[in-house]
Length: 340
Ligand code: PBG
View 1 (cartoon, rainbow, N blue to C red):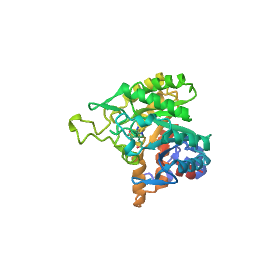
View 2: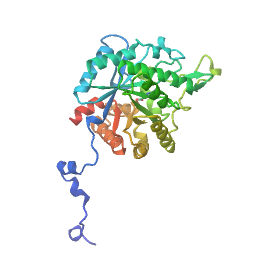
View 3: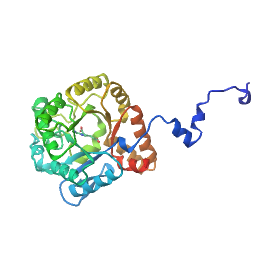
View 4: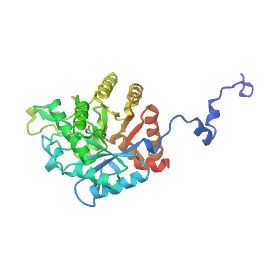
């Protein structure tokens, strides 16, 4: 039996793991606050915040509190926030008309953010689900989520958001053709500098549950008229989790239509898709570390089963390593402090 004492082993990868400084020198992927985008929820009211039950430490804020939060995030070096509106049930309708009112909660929140923290990039969500009483990202007719009537509304939403001061509009719906239509409308309305971050490969995922709690926006189906058969899932527009070729096809279309940035969502179950999209993309690639991914770590940490900080940083680093330039994550504020 040869013993390790006389075993000649010149190639020893462990040499580069010996101390923290040598590990820093050999490190291939870095996570910086530059990579982080903080999603934020805004609600009506004054000087209030409500914790989202399935998302510990994440809140819906009234506009004044939202501005305070944005100031904190910007001071930490986070370059952008992605804003989502919690619309009261009484204002939700099948045609999502409230979305286009020039003076409602959402554009008002954008204006308040841009006034208080002008350097912070504001990303708005152009999708109908927070406003649609059916909980779908599109207009529902006879049980079908119709594409072309929906993107007409999204086009007008995008212009409204740009007028309110949004730096980036983000269609999160997966309707066909919306990036091109929005680009044309923005340019036509004098908003050539408003960028589009497209949710390019957004999967029909079960990991959005806590977000739908936050906005009370789950697709409902229709209990009173089951014959209308409104689907209680988003499978006819969001992508099949089994597919990745299709993500490349969506990417090609979004790039042709003028997307300035593209996104894969969720992140952790789709690291291969992030990698693939990054290889084919000549624009920055974002990944959305979604509400369910956040909730899993939070719940396990609350039980003492996982270490929150180390798991969150490991997950975010993994998403960067897969190829994401930018990460939307509910850990953004904590991560910025941890990185610091
Ligand atoms: C809807 C939208 C969703 C999320 C962002 N925009 C949910 C959905 O598609 O039902 C999910 C984000 C998250 O889970 O953190 N346009």
